[in-house]
Length: 182
Image (cartoon, rainbow, N blue to C red; front, side, top):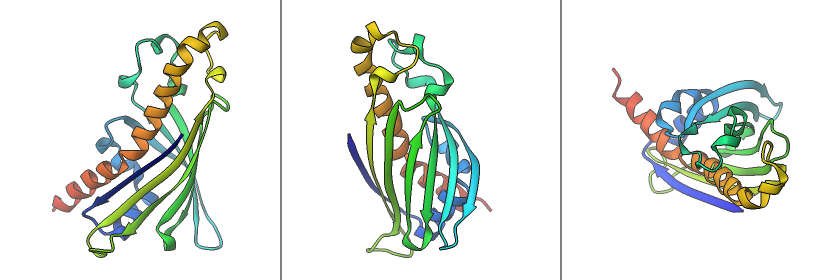
């Protein structure tokens, strides 16, 4: 499944990019479906890019009732391996889970100066592709995979796309609050 989200926020792109690369943990309170983000590894690459690995953990509040008996904390967490190209205002990313190859998810996001107000606004574009493999879902007996599989697939698709696409609102909330502080 391909997905795309575009949004514009009233903060300069260099500031937005800095938060995304250096301080993303600070926006967690502004992401309603994310409980935590932990930076696991950072690496400066010779060409000015940065490779950053982070672990995200989603909230369990939105787990469908039919899936609750099968859901563990591992289901709600994923690893984001990102290669940031600050000069191009973009990041190429891949998501993975420690549950094995439950899904494939990757994409490119950009945080560019808005052409209409380049010093004041940022245009955010998230493009991704997600493929879920229901038969690989751990803890669900193979007899139930056909019945519960589609619900699990919708849940994973909804969880990941919702969390990825809520970034603009989270960034805007965090930066607006930071601007109001003395």
